[in-house]
Image 1 (cartoon, rainbow, N blue to C red):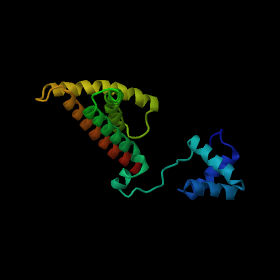
Image 2: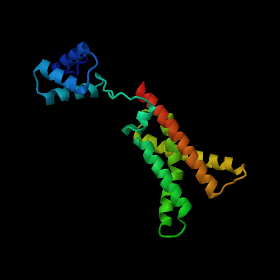
Image 3: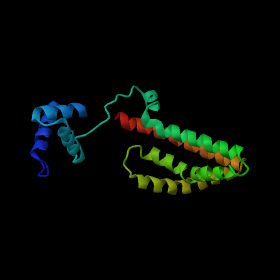
Image 4: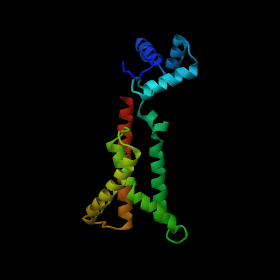
Length: 191
């Protein structure tokens, strides 16, 4: 045992090791009843043990499959992304006069400079291995690399570099990478 642990924490670790896998509520109640402390203090002990790395807290909900994951809160980011892509596509296609033209500029700028890199980062790093600031910076950097590559590929196609083909290519790239990210996130949660 580490010297930074108190006697209650040491007793709680021993108790939890004997009991095996339990929920947070069960662990809290177990510690409170066996060590004779209030539930609030037991909850604090469980939290401190988790913070110091002695206890793993895992999502206990059993996913029945990929379809249940798609409809869960963990996949809300994908549905927000899908809504953003649809809204941006509609503004680019339908709006061409001020004052709503400025909305097109704002949505389009974020769509080009952030979304392609963000979905690629989500696909490459489905778990929370990166800090939010790192994700943000990498998303912008990768978008600045991906969009010109898509433009280069479009340059050698019959469609060329026009607003329609660029929009459809970025939408297709974002949706495919987003779906790959959903699959990888599901596998990471399932493991």
